[in-house]
Length: 440
Image (cartoon, rainbow, N blue to C red):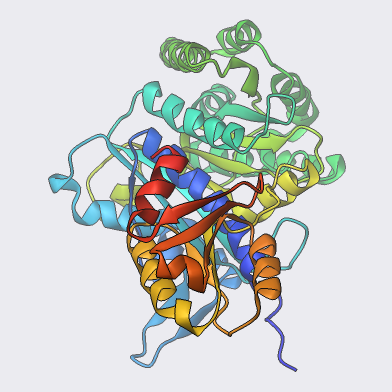
C-alpha cells in the first residue's frame, strides 16, 4: 500500500476544514489591515534562492535539473519570489505596497516536532516605507491574527530586537562589517550552542576579551525595558558618529513601542535583544513570536530587509514582513483546545417522500442552491426513517420535507433541526422564508 512521502501530509476532509479555518483567519485579518493578496510560482530558479541565502541553502531544498537543463527548486519560502516580483514592477507599484499570501513551501530537512518537509505559511510584507510605522503595522497584524484564533497575552509573546543596534555596538568594539555579520550569526545561536563552543568560535574576534564580551551580551539579552536599553547603548557608544546613530535608533524604538501601545498590544510585545535572526539580509527591527510555555518552536518570525529587492535586481526599496507556518500554530491551538470541533456548515437537508415528490424536491433543491444555500439529500430512495436520521446526522440547520400530500398542495414541511419545531412552507417561497429566518 502506498503512503504519503516522509514529511508530507494527507488532508482528509476534517483536516482540510481545519486548515481552511486557519487560512480564513489569516486572509480575513490581512484584508482587515488592507493588505492585498498575491501568489507566485511554486518552482523557481535555484539561483534565486542562492542569491538570497547563499550556497549552503542548496542542501535544504528540493532542487533538480529540469528537462530544459535549468537548475530549479521548489520554493522553501516566499520572500525571494516576492522580492523578485516587486523588483520587476517596482516603478509601477503604488507605495506603500502591502501584500500577503498563503502558500505551500518545501524544505528537504530532518523532520521534527513543528517542522515538516511540506508546510503552509502566511506571509505579510510592506514595501516602500522605511519608518517604524511599517514595522508596527506588520507586528500588529501578526498579533491580531493570533488573538483572533483565541490566543491571549498569557499564551504568546512577540520578542523584538534590532540588528542595527547590534551592529552599532559591535562596530564600537572595533569589528569590521564582515566580522559583524559572522558574530551576529553566532549570537543568533546563543540559546542553542554550548557556552564552551561559543567561546571558541568568538575567540578569533575578541581574543582575551571574549569572556568579557559574552558577559556584556548576557546583560544585553536580559534587558526588557526601554529605559535599560537606552542606558546600555548610550553608555557603550564610542564616537560622535555612533552616538548620533544610536540616538536615531532609540527614537525609532520609542516610536515603534508607542504605536503598538496605542493599538493596545503593549502586553503582547517584549524587548529581547537575544533575537538576532541569523540571515544576513535582515536590517533594523527583527522579531519572533513564541509560545510562552515554550513547548513549541517559534510561532512566527520576521523583520526588516531593506536591501533584498536591490540585491535581486530591483531598485533600493525598504521592506519589512513576517511569516507564520501552519504546523506549529495548529499544534499550539490543539494543545490549548482552540481548534473548532469542525462540522462543515450545512443549511438544509431535503427529505423526499417517494417518486411523486421527487421532481418538486429536485427543483427546489436547485433553486435553494442557486440562492446560496448549502443543500444535501439522499440520492438513493431511502424511507423516511433513514432520511430523517441522515438529516439529524448532517449538522444541517433545517430539514425541508417533501411528502406526496404536501406537494399536491404546493407546500412542504420545514423542520428546525435544533428546536424540532415544524411548519408548512409554500414551494415558491422556500428560499425567501429561509432568508427571513436566517435574518438575511
